[in-house]
Amino acid sequence: MGTLQEHFRSLCVLDKQVPLFCTRRDGSIELLPYGTNGRLVLKRSDGMESLMRGLGKQLIRQYDAGQVRNDGILYMMHWCIDDEIIPLYIGKAETFGRKEGSLSENIKDLDKGNGKFGRWGYGYAYHLGDLSAATLSGHEGSKVTLKYERWRDRLFYPVEKNVVRPRDPVYFFATLWGDKQKSVWSQVSPTTLAFEEYLLIGLASREYGKYLLNQEGRYRYEEV
Image (cartoon, rainbow, N blue to C red):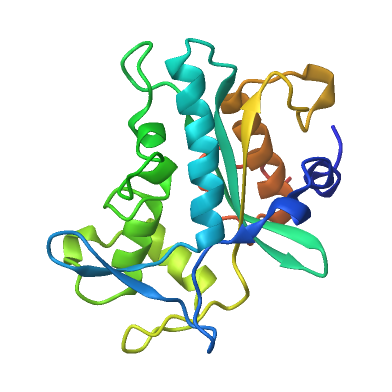
């Protein structure tokens, strides 16, 4: 099994990464009114929107043609410091939903929606909806979770009056995952999307454990 940085180079992460957030000239994150109550959310960048919608539409076309070739989308939120990728969160959006043979609502939403958006939607129970609830005023206290308070504290300087400034630029990478992709564990290629996510989280937690925000699937050991 190669190093994570070697694998990130093979996936061309540096060439394909995009900013996660839409930022103003002063470096703060642009906010967007969302939902029937107009609550403020952290706005995705145009590049991130284009990347995810493009991947989603490819999966939708495959599904509609009855020729699904990819398990879904593998994604990563990260920092990039001196060309070193620092993984912050690794996850997936699978092509098929809970009902056998059905297209996932997360993928469907990538066509024209905003609430689910391949797990990065503005709705609650999705990454940017819940991160916004933990970061911005105007959200019900019941929507604030410890998980996204940890995200907020890792990503942003302390927030005052809904002015959100990243500690470092936050990048996003995503790719379709199928049997043409080379696994980080080359000896077992090809891998399923779920297994690849598991491998990457395990390796990232071992090499970048103090930065990684994933809690499930982390590499664990006992010191003796």
